Image (tube, rainbow, N blue to C red):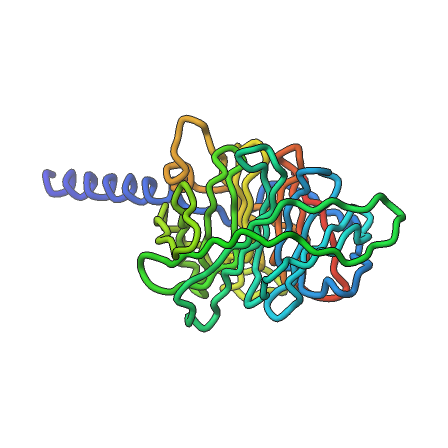
Amino acid sequence: MKAHLLQLALVFAAVLTVRGQSAGAWPEQPVPSTSQQVAILEDKRIKESSGLALGVRDPSIFWTVNDSGGEPCVFAIDRSGKTRAKVRVRDAANFDWEDAASCKDENGTPTLFIGDIGDNLLIRSTIQVYQITEPEINAPGQPVAEAETAAPQLWRANYPDGKHNAESLLVHPQTRRLYILTKSDDGKCALYAFPQPLQPKVSMVLEKVVDLTFPKLIRAGKRPHDNCMTSAASFAPDGSRMVVSTYSSLYEWLLPKNRSLAEALQQAPVRIEPELLRQTEAVCYDSDSRTLWITSEHLPTPLLRVTR
């Protein structure tokens, strides 16, 4: 009898252990959402859209950049798919531009950050982020001539634990702290933070915030490990949420004010399943801090709105 009770106790303990482990498991089922293709980008020069940032001067437009090897330029696009500005970043080179982010700087000036952070071959001893004042844009219907920025501020950094590939650059809208989320084929990655204040003319050592592991997931039209690879990320304008894009899914976390970022990201996110695109490498929030926008890295380039 005692042996039987002991067996029951062990089974019950095992069930509790499994339940405890699964409580924080990442969801396979997505939350209900709707994807709407709002436009196809008219500008064929935007052929590898690899970052999306909401305009601060005018939230009806987005800023995007092309991937590695493209011109060192940022493009402003509106929600009808028209280009409203093309701006060359002075003294810059597009080694592997992978993302863009926007916020107001400490003086309230609308600012763009461009992440030259890609490193597929794991050969870069340092990565870099360009900071520019958000350019002015032309009025709708006006011709768009190429402009040029003033000399950018260049921030260099290196990881504390070796070389990493990354495609996700974020800037927190309230603290203005810069973050990079790394990328790997097996889903094991980490969020790193830049020091504050930022230090010019040196390579800053990034601070690891939290380790994350994105799961394999079967979705028709994609390989299971496509869901592991992080391709873009963004904070909501009000700082209440964070989203990460993979090639198959969007994952979103709530960021309560009474929790640190590391604590918030240790909770299970919700999974959003947008319309399947060929190669989603850009995501950002709208000004409502809930609606999401994505593009894909190919021609024709779609602009999609995702709501839930």
